Image (cartoon, rainbow, N blue to C red):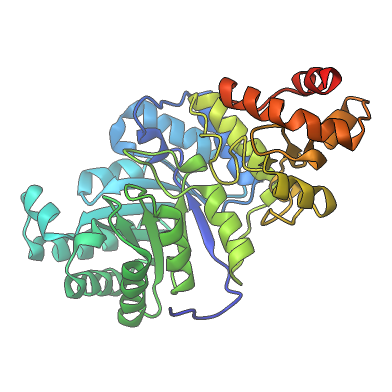
Amino acid sequence: MNTPNSNRRIIISDTTLRDGEQAPGVAFTKEEKIALARALSDAGVDELEAGVPAMGQEERSLIRCLAALGLRTPLSCWCRGTEKDLELAARCNTGRVHLSFPVSQRLIMAMGKEAGQIFDAVDTLVHRAREEFDVISVGAMDASRADIDFLCAFATCADESGAQRTRLADTVGILTPHSVCRMVTELKHAVPHMELEFHGHNDLGMATANSVVAAESGADVISVTIGGIGERAGNAALEEVAVALSCGTNLETGICLPELAGLNALSEQITGVEPRPSKPITGSAVFTHESGIHAHATLKDPNAFQPFSPGTVGRRDATIVAGKHSGTSALAHILAGQGMQVPRKTLVKSIPTIRREAEEKKRCLTPHEVMAICSAS
C-alpha cells in the first residue's frame, strides 16, 4: 500500500448537516443544526458541509444563519453541477462551495448527459464559482463505477479550471480498500497538486476502512458524518475514522478525541438513532468485559484487552459484568463494588448457577442478582 508523507495532517470534512440528514427519518430543526454545528466545530472538525441551497429559501436562510455564527470551522454549500444551484449557493454567505457531477457512464446516461457536456460544465461553473467563493470543490459522483481514465481527465479538467479539490465519491458504497488505494494513487499521479477528498458510503460495511486507506494512500481530505448516519447504510463515521487514524496510523487530524462521546450523545438525542451495543467507539458494550480471561487481565491492566483507554474518547472506565463466561475474578470485583467480600470457594460454587441464570435470561446478571446467588451458595 502506498503510504506517502507519514505524519501528514488529514482534513476532516463533516457532512452530518447535509448527507447525514438524508438518512431516512432524520430531519434537523434550525436549533438542532446550530447545536450540531457548534459541537462539531468544538470537536475540531476542519470543515462543515452546511446544506443544499437548492432545497429552498428556508434552507438558504438556515445556511446563512450558520455562517453568521462565527465558528472557527469554515462552511460549504453542496450543489449539483448547474448554474442555478451555483447562483443559489452564492446567496448563502459561505466561503466554500461543492459542485457535484456524475462521472460514471451509468449516471451520466441516467441524467441525460454526454461525457463532453460534463467537462464543459466543470470548466464553465468552476470559472464562475471563482468569482464568488474562495475554495471550490468539484465532486466526482459515482467515482467508484467510473472509468479510471475518464476520472483522471475529470480531475485534470477541474484542476485546470481553478478548483482546489476533487471529491472522489463512493456513491453506492461498493469500493474495497485495495480498489480505494488504486484509485487514490492514480488520481494523485494525475493531479499531484490538487487536494483529493474521499467520500465513502457504507453499503458493504467498509466506509471506515476505505476512508483510512484513502488517507494512507494520499487523500488529503476525508468526508464523514457523526455516527456514520446517512442514506441507505450510511457514511464513514467521524468517530471511527478519527480514532482509527489516531491509533492505527502516523497520520494526524485536528479532532479532539475526548469530545467524541458528547458529540455522539448529542446526535443520538437529536436524531433518536442509537448505536448498536457493539458499535465501535460509541457502543454501550465496547468497553464491557464478561469473559473470565478478559476480565481477569483487565483488572490487572485496563488495556490488556482494549485498544485504548475509554477516557481517550470521552468514555467512562471499562465495566466488568457477570454472565455465562465469567470467572471468579470478575465476580469478586462485582461483589467488592457492592461492599461484599466472599471467599473464593463460595465464588467457585456460585459459578454454575450464574452461568445457568445468564443462559436462561439471555443477559448479564445485575450486581444484586450476583449477590443473591453468592449469598445462597
